[in-house]
Length: 466
Image 1 (cartoon, helix red, strand yellow):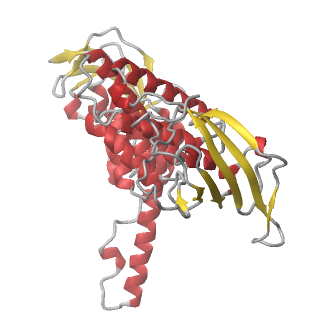
Image 2: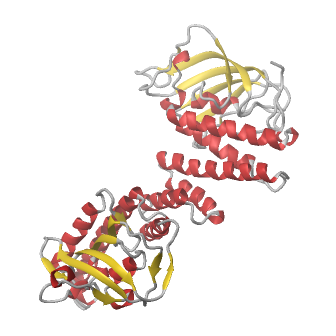
Image 3: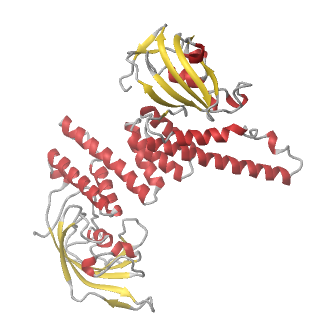
């Protein structure tokens, strides 16, 4: 290896310090910027260069000092002899603490690390196993690091190839459980391609933009794993600015919003996602979770307001300000829809309407909202009780999507001639809280088998996705 370095601006950049005339004391070099890895320079290094992500280095670990279980200030060296480690920085061959510290060291610099999070120093080669507790101190020296190209010295092909390799390394790190280090790889790629307009070749520019987007999405995924929902949401928002229908970004931002209790935003993202992918099971499940959480919050707010009214007798009763009690059948309907949505072949639309294709028609057109259609149908309550059937009458019925309940209005415009669907329709898309007495109670979720026999009015071409 030659002495020196450079990979300026790559997926995990080091820092160049101008404090060459002063010794460095307890500088935070942790990936989390939380003072969990403090670095004290005990012997100044040479020059200004530092190794960076993807650089081959040789570092000597001279001592590993662990605290005594009986005395927190009593440290003992547990390393039998100094160890020289030759690795590529950023590839996970060192602990997170050493990875972070080596990015901040100059040639021949010696330093003492103080590490307060045991998981960040796990390293079998140094005898530091998982499950330890207490503070660990490590003395080390940067022996060598290779000289590599600066970002501005790379060709566009080299930039894309380098970023692709580091993205792949991020994926490998996630598989091995090194989530913090993987996050550094992805964040680094985003920074590496902070300006892509300078890439003249359109194909290479396209690859660079895609690598940046994927890395931002992967950052969001890792941040969610690490419990940083706010950071994950910001990464997704960055993607959605340029790609507003990106399904992964919508789902991960909705997940982050749910964790942050920002339920309205989560619901909005899930609605947009399901408009793009109506059969996305993970999104449908998350949508149900968000709805449940909102109901719990609404219930708590209702109780809180009720208690306030009791405390202040001069106020109007809570019933004057809250929604009326939910009709008896609504809870059963919600539970039925939740279970039904998990069944094979069932598609849940953003509105809450569920359908399953029983027979796929050969028609090439959808009816418009006002087009009359000859249809067969049969309707039942969720307990199986039948309340209407054109089959029993022995003849089709003609109506337009705009003539019927909201659930049918939506579904019919997605169907073609010959389609036969089973629909499960929430009460708010059917007859609402009042029902249709005497056969349909209030707030009833309804099940219909429906087929379009013939479209008699205007049509629109069948959507390709269907």
